[in-house]
Image (cartoon, rainbow, N blue to C red; front, side, top):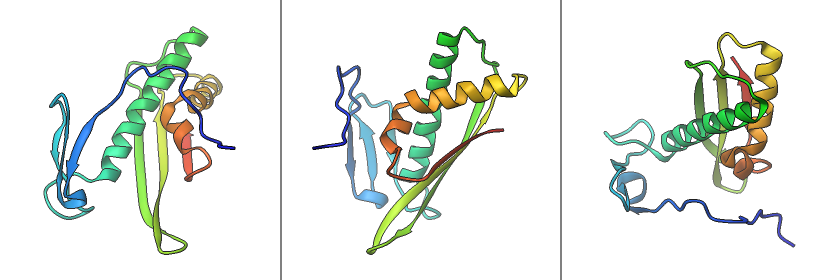
Length: 141
């Protein structure tokens, strides 16, 4: 029996064509993303960990907004998420990632902000995809 969640309905499908791996390029089918890739700390391109940090943090902000809307709470205009994605070795000669995110909700009551953060972590697609698979630490700034 699989632990995998199945989608009730597909809302969107992202499509990208990548060549060359970490020394290559990636382009979405609509042309909105067309990037050069480089290994971390090398070359002039971005790397998959940076893309994951940007994607997860943007998605998490969307989850914060959705949860706050349901709770009838107004989020600060200057909310932000600082994401860090670590890459390193794991047992059996493989590699893994870990995520740390710091959520800034300036001016909000800390208890309310924490409850929104906790609820957002339950609905965010990236949180659901990574839960139980990698270390993810999300904290209120």
